Image (cartoon, rainbow, N blue to C red; front, side, top):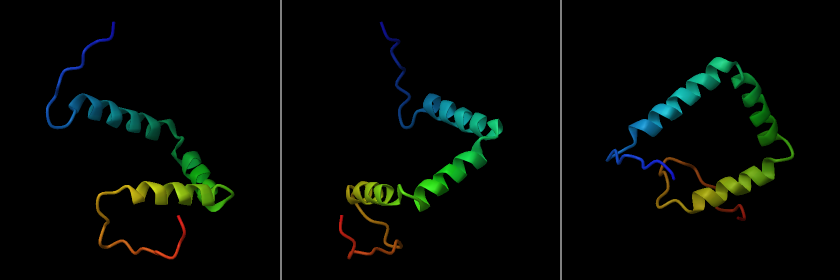
Length: 77
């Protein structure tokens, strides 16, 4: 049987604390530079088109757009 989570109302302090601790542990682990380099290779390399398409798909579902973001509507989805 699973443990029932307490309703914390607006926001979830327990989840936020767990997330923040996870981020701190990742930073302390020293793996940030490698992860950043791996991400850069993916964005600039062979995965570029796939990542770009995924970003456009995600943004297309947004309820509203950031008015300060420049958009190139000539790109096919």
